[in-house]
Structures are given as C-alpha cells and as structure tokens.
Length: 217
Figure 1 (tube, rainbow, N blue to C red):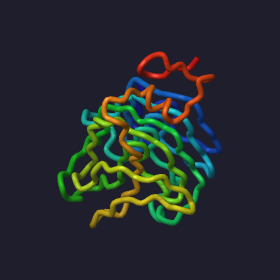
Figure 2: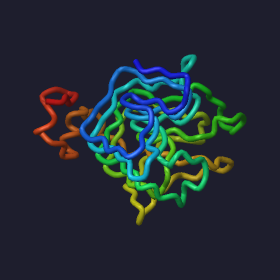
Figure 3: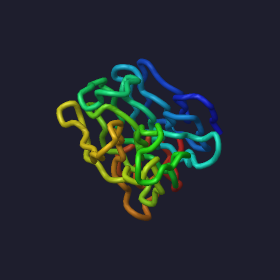
C-alpha cells in the first residue's frame, strides 16, 4: 500500500522531471489527497513519458483519507503542474500503450450533479488531468471499470488517440473549466490483462504472458 496525505501520489513514484518509464507495473493500493495515479501522481517535466505499463492498484477513494480529486488509473496530472490553459499547452508528455486494470476509480467527495465545493479537477480512467496537446495513444481500461468522479456530469467515455497535431477531444461540461481527462478505450468484455497487452504488441522478451496478468521476466 502507498499512502500520503499530500499531493502527487503514485504506485511507483510521486512526480517526475525528465523521466521515461517503460515496461513497469503497480499493484496493491494507492491513496492520497489529490493528484493520485496508479503509476505516478504527475508527469511534470517537458517530455516525461510512460510506455507499455499497467496498474491494477486499488484507487477506490471513497474511504477516509483518500483522494478528493484527480485520480487516474495510470497518471494523476500531466500538464506542467498548471491549472489553466490546458487546451493549448504542449508539454510533450506521452502516455502510450498503457493499461488501467482497476475495478473502480472513485473520488472520496461526491457532490452529486452540481459543482458546489472546490473539488473540481477531473479524474480519468488513464489520466486524470492533462494538457490536450500531449500524446495519449493506444491505452485501455478494464471493460467493467466502476468510475465515479466528484459530480455525475463527469462521466466515463472513450477517446481517440491524441498528439500535438490532433489534440485530445474531451466532452465539455457547462460550469466546469478543469475537465481534461483521458479515459482511453474500454478493453473487450471478458478479455484478460495479458490478452490486452499482447494485442498492444508488448515484448515477449520483457513480459511473461503465461498467466492472466503479465509479469516481468
């Protein structure tokens, strides 16, 4: 279990500057106040990236001392630690070929259909809150994921790959200006994590695919 009462909490690391993560995974559970991710709390450097990695870490933040906002299956934040201007910012972060295999992603504070209160940073199946001009590609979430953000207007949906040339498209919600999640796409119902990873072409030199969940050789 990873727990912090602070920001930027991740299953492998809190936040980064000048890092590339490849062929990694996390499990167990991850809990923090905000900006919480299965792999990392934040990609905060220009070009920081995560490739071919997965998380099964429990991110159900409905209990005490769990996240109030910005919970991501893989990454919490990827926007140079900025709150505004995410629709034009180009930090060069890449999240590609990653798999969020959680049963549930939920924030602790649930305000119903409105936006009362201050818990207004989005959560996401893959990435909670990022810049639209990052590269998000070929990422999948568990088909049965139980997703609940702080308001029921912020729902789970599938998104196409993005790049600086083809920015991420998000479903706009009136009254919310901090809604920049990346949910990736749902894996096929009944598929195993191993099958999804194999479909993405993860290397057999690195991964053992003999079970339902890949392990490192």
